[in-house]
Image (cartoon, rainbow, N blue to C red; front, top):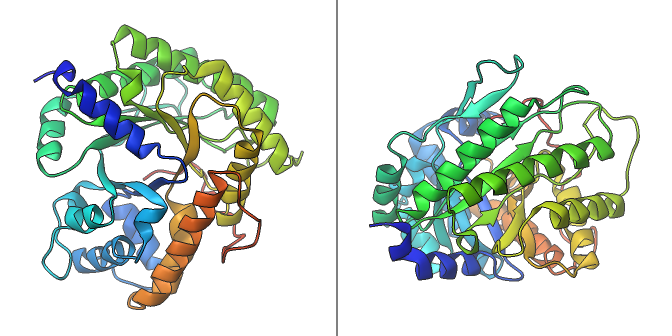
Length: 354
């Protein structure tokens, strides 16, 4: 089968994922990364514990009111809940669409700067995507990473290689019936100001959509998952949430085609509260051609993980529901800062990998 066989389904799924007032829960951490999260609460990194933690999230009562989709790691897509029912069924019962992380990690990019990478996983991707579709997944995610690092970064080679990889991925998974979430992340590492971030981000996103055009990607059957336009983590000049929102929306308007189904921002190391406040400010601006929402991992899970602490299901679910509701409200421009339980702890990790 080919993308044309799935065209109507792709558009319908993308529109459901971009439902106003809902966002995406990213729980696609690799086994080693999940191990680091569990270690932070003194829980051993075993399949049973990963199953228990993710099962706790997926069975949170009413989660589907705020969450349209969940990005899974391959283990979770094929895994059963502790009660024997498949994890994807637990999500389906809440009206949450299962998705799957399909990239296979970052590799050094020959000919580029020492820290620059490309994302691997294109070989055999359409076949793998077809198997994920059979298992219940209806969308996919692929993360490319670019870093400003200095006045000359990222290089043109890194931009073009990662843009092409994102476009090839998008077309490949559409041929298997999966909606691609396109994620060109600009890391917060560095001391650059917000103007530099905006300049680089516009260049990167435009390159991605030029590559998508060449690869005949169905944009109506895609979502974009970009970073917010923020200064580098070491920048001495502070900016307000309103300024971040204005820069981010302006950058998106200058680079993202109106035909894209929706934009779901990543939190990229922001605190739980900041991720909600920034998103809220963007939606107060309004007048965008796409639904503007969230696809958060750490900014939805940080307090929930600590509340769960290995066994406290009720406490973990209380926190994930609070953050899901907060971001649902923010995606409509209705969030009142501090109105939901949250953490102000910055979640930035230099050179963050999944």
